[in-house]
Image 1 (tube, rainbow, N blue to C red):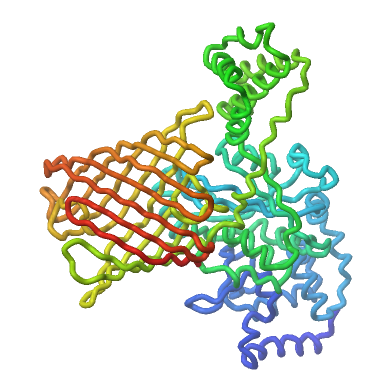
Image 2: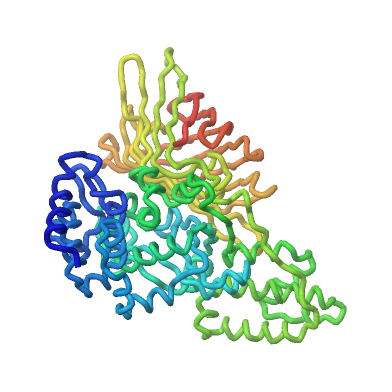
Length: 614
């Protein structure tokens, strides 16, 4: 045990260190990361909101007081404390030379079981691709995967034995609007959880059809132990969950900062964190990422394997799944190889389309799958290797930064002088932005603000809290609807009122098609706008019509989005149209040049300039 005199000296030095040097405000970088301290508008505070996490009463906002209180607990050999906070115990014991036997941790039964169950051969950061149907996952999701089976190599089946470390919100509402609002204002409690990795595969790969990208981290055994100790300490605590500042990625990166304070991941990232940005930041530490692996979603597996069927095989497949017609499969002239391919693709189709029935092993589609499996067992051919190739161009770390500043010069019809357009977008991706690493069939814009600057004025042109589009091209047997939606406040573009500003909510849906590997994507939607302006009759207007257009891409160098909308204002009893073209030439993933043109009943305009991604 440390002597009382030495203990008093240590506590005195701690209490005076803050006044001697402002760099010691957190006591040390390691202590800052272990306790999740950050400097905010009201001073230093911990991200952890659960008061049980702190030993001192003012520990959430006073690093020095918390530091001293922890030392006293260790010096008293408080076993409840030592078993609950092994990371703090090890750090303080070693850094202050307290000379307390570290073997005391062997008496902590639950902690030792946790180490045995979780100590990994490899640690992976997993990125789950974008999912627009859930507000919390529109930007993607990150979590950790612990594998104890590295000797099995890239065998996807061995991953089912892994453990996932996840941070998520305790959702108390199924209402999407309430869920979004609560997520923005911190209305949910978030916490870490340890779950079998196959549950995450089931949730993301199977139910939500999201691809999984795993980034294997080059960690030493000592670093792995630090990571586990940190997770153990946080396992029973909670935070207020915030979509943009206290989300899954922010918490996962705070875990990694606890492994090595020199990495400073949270310091490298902006205050508002998008999950894909955390993947990129891993590469700022040389040698940290040792390998990338890809696990395709059930949907991608079916689509890719279906493409490998011949025209005749696709016809037989269609009759089989739609009409339970086995005539083609049982045809004696059909080769064993073709039978194997058709039945293999049928199994993939069933797993994708009816994943829940298959999982719970009940229902007609589960019985149908058993029938298909029995037929497949009777085919002697082992089957061709219907592998899904890794789409290297979609690796998330290749994506452009999510925030964008747009600077354009505008020439408008009947206006003599040029004006300047200045725009900022918080996140994430437009159809015309650089494609590598980004969701090429989705457009996700959050908190986009546009200003118009002339010689005599600086005006807000539009504010768009959210604009999303999800294209699901017809093909690969399915015929889903594509979706578009926007909420914004902007100047009238359709000549429905005189220089008024309109609150608008718009939705559109219809088919889209994809050609030349998503280089040409035409679409045609039915659209409806619900608009509010004080100059409207009864302040409301409903604008219904048709919207058609296309996305055109030339490799990774050029993208354009063309849209034409013809509609009828029901209350105003007036037809209107809006044609827009946006083209971007991609120079780097940080800079591209842009040409935009639009035409409507009200005016025509042309804009040229640059986009800056950061």
